[in-house]
Figure 1 (cartoon, one colour):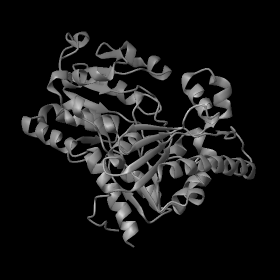
Figure 2 (cartoon, rainbow, N blue to C red):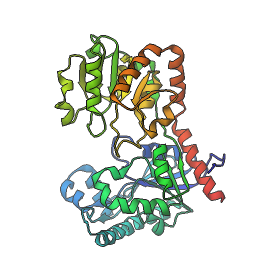
Figure 3 (tube, one colour):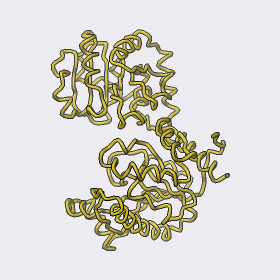
Figure 4 (tube, rainbow, N blue to C red):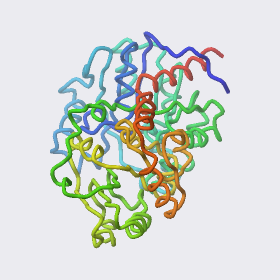
Length: 405
């Protein structure tokens, strides 16, 4: 279904719910989108309600203490973050029930928790004077399942940016609830073509809206100094930056590449899980582990690589995920070899995509031989098009298409 060209939204009231509270230091898509939305609209970013188990286990931690003070009305629940942007700490506590396996019982407790959560949001909406709200749900399929019914938004949006059902915590109840939530939402949007197709099974108003990235750190020439710890590693260097998790990365593939081309040096930057620590990679003379590194040092590592790789293993967790690290690699002009998944299709003209460990050896060789200043410039230009502003424009197109019908 073609979208309208109307890619702006002005002076609207947007309520955002999702997986990540604002007061967690790590970034997230949803927080970036909230900031971009707030440039021309009023935005209320809602933290999840405190659940009883979290309270019992962590009641002395500052974040939990803050939530209890709000629940006890000792402190206000609405905090101003910036112009047009507020953060809500719900003034309620909900029970912990996700472990329940009897669906009618789970549904009862979930609806009750949703009602308390919604009532807290409604009080904040009234206090802020929000009208005709747009409800933006970032993959929150349990805690926000009934919010469309309770908040009665002008537009309800479900945002799919991870295939949550590939994770055990979400699988049992989520396999039933998420399709229903997608179906009843007015619009579904996704940051990968795979997830857009998944949502489209249940809702024809499902759109791929792309992914925003803040690539400033990776385009800053002052951050490209080669780290001292890898200065003595000979070229060519084949590099990966990110968490080294066997759930997401193909250890056998890495072992095959390293053993097939001993003249290539492989540098793996990031914390390892137990499977990586026990792998044969640690016994290979041309494989180097640096451990986890501060984010601001990563451009220096990437800049020192001759080829960057993203050796994903294909499973339910990885197949639909938008790989933001690819944009980071490309923003530095680096040739990239990655696993061929549907989510990678949008990068097909600017990366080398392989399906097997043998493909990786062949494609890394091609990447080394075909690199040029012209190719590098093309990669940088492509990555620079993936901005949060452009991402939000695509979301606005979907909203305007729905409201125009």
